[in-house]
Image 1 (spheres, rainbow, N blue to C red):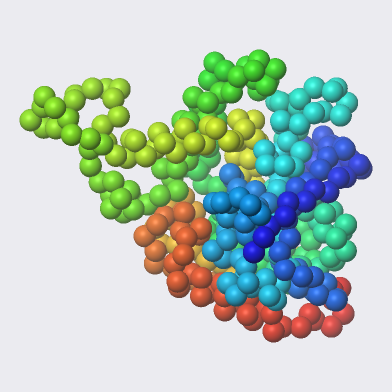
Image 2 (tube, rainbow, N blue to C red):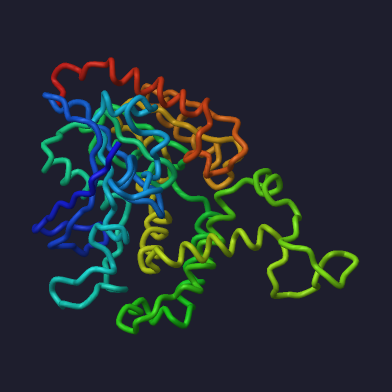
Length: 384
């Protein structure tokens, strides 16, 4: 399946939750499959922290350019583009095509940098809704996402309850735990204390805070993997034979000796070459801020009272960053409101990253759910 990146421009200002606004912005997006005559088969895919609108397919003439969820979405796959018109949108503030800190501020002529306004999950959802308006799509057959993308899918059902028939929320949570916020803060501090950060205006200095980005990615990556996977993949293996010690160690505090150290440094180096530091700060803050129950005294059941969509929630047993307990919280709150809910807890060893991988049970759960959607006619009286 060939993917084609597209861009849509918005001249009118988007009001943000912070009280600021963003005008003259653009959103990068891709679509796969065909929109049917009554426009009732659209599926919106929401991306996580370091992903983008390139959800599926490959770019013509480019090897190894598969979309980040290409194993899930495409002809004959779990989300079958023979039946569904799938849309991937790059969030505002990202560094993969939509307006973000690396772009020019229309009022000043300078790069936004640290002056890019704070954005939230709710802001992203509102921007996505405006793009769907331009595409003439008034109601989604489904909205789907994993991790931070799952938070957006949930937020869609709260902000625009009449525009979503189904929500598929994978490896996600209704808010972050204090531990998760702490991990995000450590990563942010690594970036902002990098001497090359320059208060977020490093573009003008011709430098990139790569040291901070490397550490941020290393911290994050540890949380995406399970202890079982790290032990199985790396254990206590040394990177290479060490000469001069019966124990096999150099006894150095700085050399890379263990395979896990080498792996993390590789991931950090790679990340620092393509991801923007200000984007990392923006997106992790959006994660921290998301909490639909906050205005209801922490009562998730009350927060979910306006939801009309049907739900599929999926969690993974070894995901300790977005644990199954968090998905079960959402299941209980939906059931308290007598919503239609399906829940699958997959016994998988891969940790949080399992939502991106090819576990056959996981893929079949999603396939079965979307087959159900494909054979379900919109409720009479709903917009389509």
